[in-house]
Length: 589
Image (cartoon, rainbow, N blue to C red; front, side):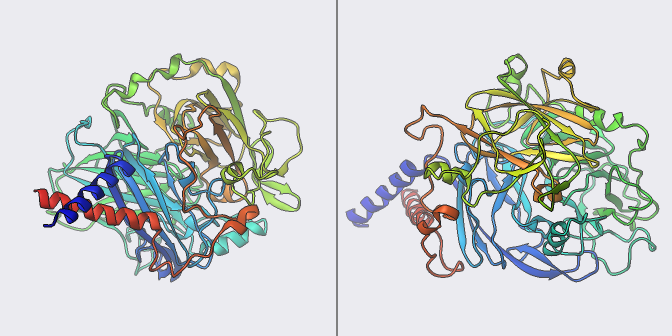
């Protein structure tokens, strides 16, 4: 081999290491398009990812640099968000309207971020136009580095289970209903991995519906990663005759406890170890059934899959395993939620124990109470609110407006607690303090259970209860081993309190994960800046492939070529350099 070739390969390898660091890259291509499917026996338009519904699993390792080229083959704009991935120093990649201009139809856009100091079970989905109600979602898994031990024996396999309520109307029809001021009504069913219920009851389940079957081997233990990707329904998850050993939720290892069933709320993710220790006299039911509803009216809205041992002697039959019998005991649900605690001695993404951050001894710098009520009419339209404000997304994303000093895109006057102001449509966001330690209290005076999500962070779930929250409730907070997560339930007529350490600069979305309420405006943003940073140490610069819209739309250049054939130039460069580096390694070996 000539000396020039050797020099080029060595330089390429050095450039890869200098530009991208020592951490490996994971490259993915996601094509979102419409296909026709019949998950509940009725042909309908769904959103597929790479031709599949649900989409493929994205599996990376802690600290990997993730490059995802998203092609939009829908007939409307698109953004993908990554629920629970913290996007450290880079809210530019978060995939919501406060930080990103939408990807137009026929265009592509490349997300580039690092799974920095994270492990666990997450999922991705489209964040605009109620599109998640038609699909476009898939699991996103961050595995431990080999040098970091996991706090349980390595399972014999990983099993992904996506559950969620489902309508036979697509997202555009659901959107029209909300725009007309209508309620979405009862879902038509619950899907398990994109499929309808097993025909456990010939009256309730029509013939001809394809169901999910999960095949396992006797004597083995599997890690089940379960995500509720639905529209608005809390679901109780259970497996007939099997215990669920909870080990992780949304990136944090939990104290290990057995449950016969677990309530999984919209947007939440859990990991369970399940041992195949039954006699396999028949297959077993896997059930996801609605919670906090009139069970007699919602009988048809139940997801049922099948757990099939390789030595099974017959099909599953008989009644489904019972859900919790707590219709007159609301404390059961709160007690289960608060029993989920952090494993303070286990290592997470780093070698140090998860409990080494002593959150309970840190002084709170700011407190916010976010109150939700049933949707109401504002300016002639049905809207949902926090503290009487229904958020109106600005034409120019907040982070872009800051970068280019666009005036009037938003206001830093979001109230820290509910007041007497008349409900209004506004662009008010929270002006938060970098490195502050804040308390957020979610007060849910709506008629439905909600889930609260915060982008860019996880938070400590320190308290939960019913009634109106008061300062006296702080005496009941868990200040030692509260679970840290990014999505938490807030029961109707109740409250949930969380602590957040604000160490991630950027613009971060606070929202309800209930798609109908989110679409109607129940969200805001936290703006966290570090005025002392003049060299991009705490926030990465504007990506060179940033899209422009609103007041900055004139800066947007037409995208050359089709989304089918074009990757962003920096991604092309990276691929070239990576190939060169790989060639160098193979030659040296």
